[in-house]
Length: 180
Length: 147
Image 1 (cartoon, each protein chain N blue to C red):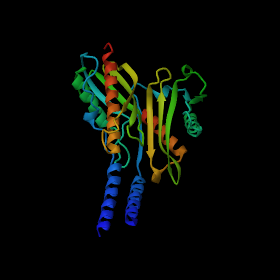
Image 2 (tube, rainbow over the protein chains, first blue to last red):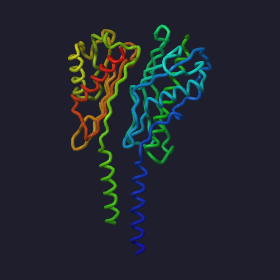
Image 3 (spheres, chains in turn cyan, green):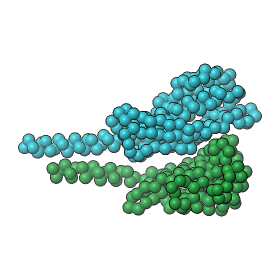
């Protein structure tokens, strides 16, 4: 009798482990992708609007992805936190329009410490005369810790967020180096 | 012990079944500073380790659109754009193309002028030819809507 109860408990534990370790994929969080500081303390006296592309909605049965809305919000929050531009505006009413498009988000399928590589095209356009102030490809990478979380999908999501955060940081640093 | 094995088999079956659900995605983005209409000569760069299947299909699709596709050996300065791609294959009874990303790049700076991506899981799998047609088609469709 005790033996049978032990078997049942073991079976339930095994099932719980399968469910827990598999987990469901959740999208990259906009706050976790936000860069809070950059190397430069430059303050540009212009307003900026942000447009994003190349992102994808996360399918819970697959792996963490970055949606266009979340990336746009993360960039807007980063611009506000670093105070690089005077203000962030919606639509095309700003002095400059920043367009960021994800072209590659390389995610591993298995592993303990996940390394995610991201590539995005950053274009800054002066709205008044449509001139291109910056056109640069930004490549970033992030490796999460093997013990950041027990759940693999969470560790992968954290690495995706880290790669996006680094990309935003590098992109804003590139803009701060411009003479606008 | 048999019960444990049965339970684990059931869990594995559920996990196998759920991952087989249809996921479809087809997106394209064109940079606001890019003008794909100006492209005349392009180079499709073969992905390292790829057998050339996707390379030929992309080149064929671009030729049908009236573009001149040059050999890999030609210098990047002699072309208007370099086309790169990443293909991801998966096994489900047979190998199929799970995801294809095609990027049109500036030959000098490597800047991505346009990108298309399609993702179709096993139940709604497309042939490599259909996948290439969808991705490249979406890039040029997106470029036309941006005008």
